[in-house]
Length: 262
Image (cartoon, rainbow, N blue to C red; front, side, top):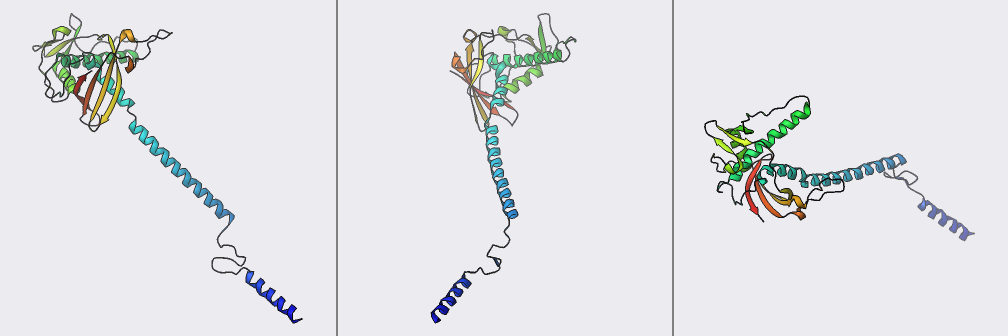
C-alpha cells in the first residue's frame, strides 16, 4: 500500500513539472504572447513588398545602365553631322588646329548650309503643299545661292572647331565662288551625288572625345531586294574606311579634330 502511494506521488510530481508555466513572454498555455494569424499575414505582405522593392531596384539599375550605354541616337546624330564632310573626303590630318587648310573643309562648310536650306524647304512644303516655297537666299543666274560670309564661317567653326585655320577663297573645282565685294559665297544649290554610300562601322566614346569609323560602300555593291528597294549597306561591304575623331566642347556640341584613312 505504501508503494502504491509513493508511485502516485511521483506521477503527480512529474505531471506538475510538465504543465506550461506563464511568464512575461508566454501565456498560461505556453503560447508566445503577441502572435496571431493576422500578424503573420501582415509579416508575409511586408516581406512580399520588400522582395518587390529589391526586384524593382535591380531592374531600374539594369535599365539605367543600358540607357547610359546605348549610343545609337548619338551615332545617328554624328552620322548626319559628318554627311557634308565625307561627301568631299578630306585628306588625313592629326590635329585640326595645326592642319593645313583644305578645299574640302570649305566645300563641306558651304554644303552644310545648303543641306540645311533644302531640308527647311521640304519641311515648309510638307506643312503647306499648296504654298510655293522659295529659297531664303538670293539665287544668281547660274542657279547658285548667295550665302553670307558669316554663315559660312559659322558652319566652318561648327564642323572644325574654333581653332581651325580659314582663309576665304574660291574653289573653282566645285564652283564655289567667294565674293569679297558682295561679302558672300556663291554656292551650287544641288545635292551632291557620289559613287559611295557611307555607313558607320564602329563608334567609341572616351572622356571628351568620340571616335567614329566610317565605311564607304560602292553604289554598285549595294544589294537590291525582290521589291526593288535598296538593302541598307553594312560595313562588311565597304571598299575603304575613314576614321574621324570628335572633340566634345560640352554636352551638346563637338567638332572634328582629326581624320585618318585606311
